[in-house]
Every structure is written in C-alpha cells, then in structure tokens.
Image (tube, rainbow, N blue to C red; front, side):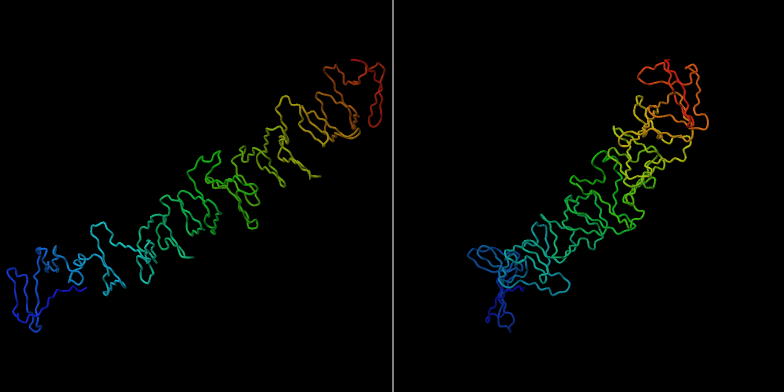
Length: 495
C-alpha cells in the first residue's frame, strides 16, 4: 500500500521567492521549481500539536502522521489519508470489510515466510475465527485439507503431534475399507489403556508378534483360536511361580475350566490324529526336579503313572467302579490291595464268556515255602466260609470255620474226593458217612488201627446213630475186601 503525501498545489505566479510565517515558522509557501509554474505548502512536523478552539479547523503533522483538528481533538485521516505505517492505519480503523472477491497475499520471494503472527504477554487468541457461513474455517491447497467451522479437521497426515486429546470421545476412522495403522514405522512401545480404561475390540484381532498382558485378559463372548506353526518353540505357555495353596480343596486354581450348564458335551477336548501319533501323548505331567514324566496319557489313552514307592497310592477311587472291558490288569511289582468298607463284595470277577479257559490264574513260579493263596479273617466269632463254590442254586463245595469242608457231590457211587497219592491223617476227629460206602482199594494194608490212650486200647468204636435203642441180638457186619465180602457177627452192647 502506498502512503499518500499531502500536497497542496497552488499557483503562485506573483510569489516566486516564497512566503514564511513568523515567529514559529511552522508553515511556509515555496514556489518550487520555476518550470512547474506552481508552489508547495510545507508543514513542519511537531512532537505535540497544541489544541485549538472548538470553532477552529486546521491540519498539521504530529511526527510523520498527518492529522486534522475536528474541533475536539487531533484525529488521523482515514482512507487515502497518507498513512505511512500499518500502526497508523490500524489505529484509525481496526476492521476490514471485504465486499467482493477475496484478500490475497502474494508471496513472491523464495525463502521467507508469507505471514508471521507473533504474540506478546497477552491472553487472547493469536487467530480467532468467527464463521457464520457454511464454508470451512480453513481450506488448504486444492482443498486437500481443511478445518470446518465445527472444528472437524481433514488432514492427509499429521507429523510432529506429541499428544492428541479429545474433549469427549475420540474416534479414529478410515474411509470404507481403508486401513488404520498405529505405529507402522515406529520401533518404540505403543501404550493403550494405561490410564485404566477398558479396551473393547469388536472385530477379529491379528497379532503377528508377541502379545504381553500385565494384568490378565477377559473375553466376554466368542470363540478364541490360537494357531501355531512352530516345531521348535512352545505355542501356549502358562507360568505362575508364585502360587502355593490357591485352589486347595476349592473350586479354583491357577488354570480353571468351569461350566454349570454342560450336559453331554466335553469340558476339555484334546484332539490328535491316531494315524500320525506314534509314541506321543495327549497329556503329560513333567517332574522338573527329576527331569522325567510323573504321569502321561498316550496313544489310545494308555496311562503311565511313575508313582513314588511300593505302598504309596497312585490311584485312589473314593467311589465308583474300575471296569476293564477287554484287557489285563498286570502288577509287575507290588500287591493288589482291595480295601472295602461297605457290606458288599470287595472283588467281583465276571467272565461269562469263558467256557474252557481259566477264569482266575494265579501263577507264582518263584514261590517255595510261601503261600500261593492266603485267606485271612481276624474276627474271633467268624462263622462264615473261606471258600464257597456255588452253582447258581446251592453250594457245591465250601471251606468254613477251622477248615471244615463240605462237598455236596452228586450221587452215591460217584467220587467227590480222589487221592491218587498221599495219605489222609486225622489227628483229632471222625470220618462220618451218612449215606454211602467207605470203599478202600489198596495193595497193602487197607486200614491200620493204632490205638493207645484214653480208650483203654479200644481200636475203634462202631456206633448206631439210630433213634431206637440197641438190642442184645447179634448183628452181621459185611466188610468187602478186594471184592470179596467178609461177614462178622457183632453183638451190640451199651458202653
């Protein structure tokens, strides 16, 4: 903008040498160059222009600023008044009305800034925009970026922004299928939710690196899938080297799977390919100090329990049954101990499919002076049976108190007890035949009686257990020896 000078041109044809006022010499008229044929009125500048009367009208210079006396004060000229500084113009008029087109600042130099705004110690805004129209407050080059009147900014990028804080909610959006990238080139840590606020992820989350969580992960709903393709590293690791007694005798634990609605489903399923599995495990408990497996569940559910020592329990079943449908129960070392506190069978073996095989086979080739089968009861009033062989209707063979043996047999003339070798020795007791015969077949002495002692040399007594009294009539007794009958006459007498 060109600040106009005040020139008062007049033609002084009669005054060529000039006119000077006195005594203050504030004004003089000069004829100027004779070629111009005119004159110029000169005003001396004043640091302070004295006030005039209210009826006076005058012009003068205060410093370099032209002013006029308006009857009250010295006022600055407006419009093309000859202001030489922006300060003079701003002091005269602090508003700019643009009625047409636009105000343009054209930057023609190459290196300097186009517009610089500086602020002193004031508290006001450096730039304050009031927009009552529909356009943006600021529009960038070719409208590639803008700031709306509502404060919504459209930028292609933000560089050097150390902090981004929203007055309320903060949304990060990409157009349509655009990608939102956080920390795409940064190698520093990315902190999300350090203020304690909850983080909600409504879509699938892909994490190509390690995921570190300080206080835990809570998944409200949905399936969680972990896919790992490494054959040299652990895919999922849970470590708690602090816990000691948490979960002891309670529904809790460092790792806890819980469901109150499951009916016929499976709470935990471990799935392997039986075709590929060869010596691997579904589950394995590892003893860190011993550097070995404490237990494992392998192919086809094979269970291996290391245990600690003979006499210590490795399997405890407080209630229920152990059923082996097809297979054997083998004890290499140790004993099979069945402790039953209920009034029912402690050990039941059902082998309905066995026809000609052995149901129970006890094989102890190393036993010399030991006992192959030991049946023991410490009850003093025991009246039951050690052994009872039952055919479904009645007992065929029983061994009871003090070894009392009862053999049912089938009919007279059929063997129920056969000794191919050996002797039968009765230390104290009787041999009683209720119905049937005592048949002795031998090549030497059939019956040898050796009697000494309390009966006074009586070798044997023949007693009639009939209810009627014995008479004194002689009775004939038949004894068959070697198939030849021998008859003896016996006279019954009372002792």
